[in-house]
Amino acid sequence: MSIRSPQDVLFIGGSGVISAASVTRAAALGHRVTVLNRGTSTTRPLPPEVETLVADVTDDDAVDAALAGREFDVVAQFRAFRPDHVAHDVERFTGRVGQYVFVSSASAYQTPPERLPVTESTPLRNPFWQYSRDKIAGEDVLVRAWRDRDFPATIVRPSHTYDRTLLPTTGGWTDVARLRAGKPVVVHGDGTSLWTLTHTEDFAVGFVGLLGHPAAVGDAFQIMGTHAPTWDQVYRWLAAAAGVDEPELVHVASETIARALPDVGPGLLGDKAHSMVFDCAKLRALVPEFGTTITYDQAAVEQIAWHDAHPDAQRVDDALDAAFDRLVAHARAV
Figure (cartoon, rainbow, N blue to C red):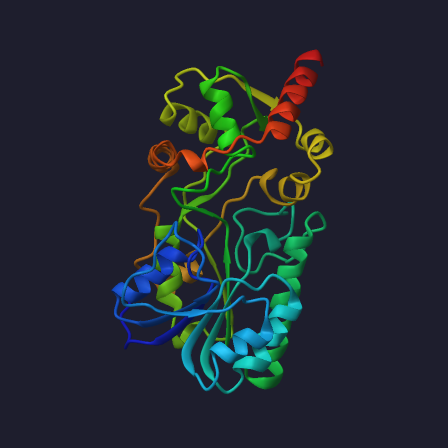
């Protein structure tokens, strides 16, 4: 395991699907961890030794007040989604941080990719999804700040990272409810594209391994595992965990789904519709302990058990459910 001296680490965010496990791991490894967020999450409680600062990260004055006079070895920014957010951080933390880690996204890569596996040198270009273009623009801010001002930036690009609460399918719990009711579920494309899924606990090993690592400053790293099942496998594993032995999967073109579900379309066409597999050799060179230890066939069981124990999380979207019915009818009529 890569071991360095304890760092003073500020997590901006820290209680979300992708960040909470990293906070827990950082604290367990002896880092002095501070979390700044709104302090409203009860789903993923922080370890007792973690310091908490309460502020809405979109309120610059509140963040500046909460951080007044503070310096950190590392700032891990999970809640910056636009280039202006990143630019504000560059001004805020210049001279006050040894490493600034920006959580970008693997959806920033060329979509669809010209070559697989995707590496850190794959071009950044996503014409389908504004979220991804904003992440690219945020990266551009940091590259300029590193080159022009020696701002100590590290960029990380996760792919689809999940925990026990976040179902990976288009419909989420609506899909599970349909499966348990014996209704068909809609799978985009022909169900055979490969999709990399990374459990948040595996992500945390790679992410925390980069914190305070001198060779990580001024560079970009993708963090995801080697587990890349087909979408049909994902839906079948989820069905099995939900107690459904023979699910009916109806394949619908991604473009058709995007037209029927405008809110889903950008993320589907700009990310999930394409096979995405990655080479993380660059990360493993610095964090050799990183790897896949949890695969989705295992995690689906954990997810269903958690949702069954939390009825308030079993939210069925009636409008989405009706749209799936229409998409199934359309597919059967073709």
